[in-house]
Length: 332
Ligand code: TXA
Ligand code: MG
Image (cartoon, rainbow, N blue to C red; front, side):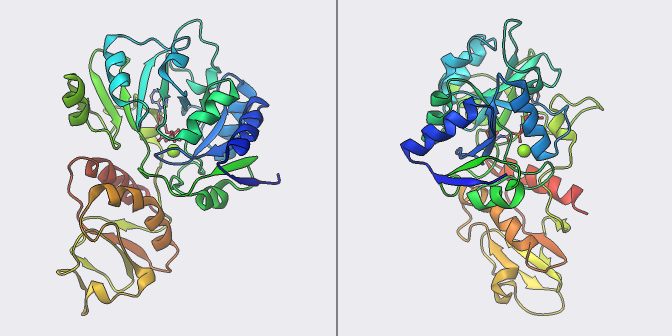
């Protein structure tokens, strides 16, 4: 397939929207990560997503809309869902809601579940694309299943270049981590994937109590994505490192003053390609935005592994640590 990369001009968004409407795969920017989009009402188009990603068929995909009203025909909003959507959309929060029996979304987006994951992204190009396509857009992150999510157009080209019809390019993603996934299909509101919107944020804005269930409690996880090998660099990742081994690269956070190299030397003197600092000033939002692209750089540095400095487990740090602990577990 010949890949077309287009900047996000009004004309180009219109062209991409026509491609979505014609059943083709289009990668597009959101505030979190780049998505691999297809018409959510076209089963053949959605099936192309699974083929391109090499994704197990049972993993459902998020359905994106340009506004809350456009989701009313397909999912059920109760009072709680309405309050949360009003407070956080457009934004990096995905809601899992009960699917309406009359919904004409492809069954593949739910992968057999009675629910659909929905979100309104906070990126004008994404919302224009969805609106102009005249449909809803099913979109997982635009990377091969099991690898790191793309936060810049060149990541999409590297990972899926042969499998996507076109890319709408808009530079690096503002948040840099996938959306928070909040399950509202049961009595208790539960976060299944941590992201920029935290349980605390939701409680503060709406008064609704939210708990975390980031790891499956038994063999049947609520979010199939929890079981998959995920966010995985190709070399081992070592967390809460207090020093760097001679053959390791360092993913730093904050001050390097007390970081040494085992056997002698200081981390600050490591060659540039072996050391990336997520945020020298210790800003967790900057660290989140840099995380995936820095992991990719260090993965290619020739190091045997990546040592990661301790990152505080508060706010968006919870989401950063969730991604890193999965990377540490699944790296081979
Ligand atoms: O930020 C994001 O959410 C990005 C951008 C493109 O919007 N999308 C994204 O999609 O990360 P994906 O497919 O890579 O991750 C969706 C996650 C998976 O872990 C999946 O298992 C879960 O959401 N999920 C989707 N539908 C679900 C459902 N009906 N019930 C439970 N979990 C669901
Ligand atoms: Mg993904």
